[in-house]
Image (tube, rainbow, N blue to C red):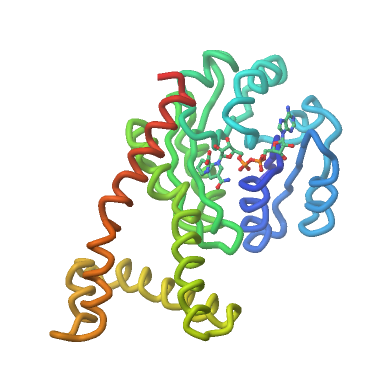
Length: 265
Ligand SMILES: NC(=O)C1=CN([C@@H]2O[C@H](COP(=O)(O)OP(=O)(O)OC[C@H]3O[C@@H](n4cnc5c(N)ncnc54)[C@H](O)[C@@H]3O)[C@@H](O)[C@H]2O)C=CC1
Ligand SMILES: O=C(O)[C@@H]1CCC=N1
């Protein structure tokens, strides 16, 4: 596998870390505006730095465009004359459609649109994929194997991408805010901060795995914890009074509204 990352920031760095843990033998190339990040990735993961777009396009088959959505139009226009029939363009930008990629990179461009998330860096990513009609079955399989090297990956309808981004791509940020707030509470009640992060993150991870692996309704699993007249139901009542559910629902709507702005919809 020969993968080129164009723009090696937070998301590309997380993907590279996940890929290299699983497949140290895969050839990873990188091109970034500032050279410092590339040197870090070279030292950590053996990423081969490229000096130009032409160089990385000549060396890689899959080209992952890891720049911000606002930089995509210009980046794809620069890549357009460099694309060969073997290239598959992999996008990660929120709100950026396959149709828009082909408008800037050319109608014939083979495109895999993806939405990964940062737990990719520890092999626990959750990614969505969809592909343009030019992408062959083998190329779809190869793309899925790249994303499965750092977690779970599924093909979904492109129309589902915005909501997927809001409940998976952005989710690590929501959960980290929740962990941070709970740690503040634990510190307020005398627990050392580092211990609080360890305890709470393990409890979050166990709860998430329980929901995922037990196939039981989250409400049933919540009810198991809430003894009649007990302590947990007192906490749940406070969460409901604070509007936790409606706040989370509003957060997802805000995320999707911002996606539409970035997409120019
Ligand atoms: N951060 C996240 O959790 C996720 C991000 N994404 C997507 O990933 C993309 C990148 O986001 P981040 O990694 O967070 O941003 P970032 O700012 O950390 O990384 C972008 C990188 O691209 C480089 N860059 C910008 N313009 C360039 C150019 N013309 N030539 C070469 N390099 C250039 C920057 O120097 C930087 O290293 C975005 O499109 C975002 O929607 C998708 C899923 C999750
Ligand atoms: O906030 C952002 O723009 C990116 C997209 C998904 C996660 N982070």
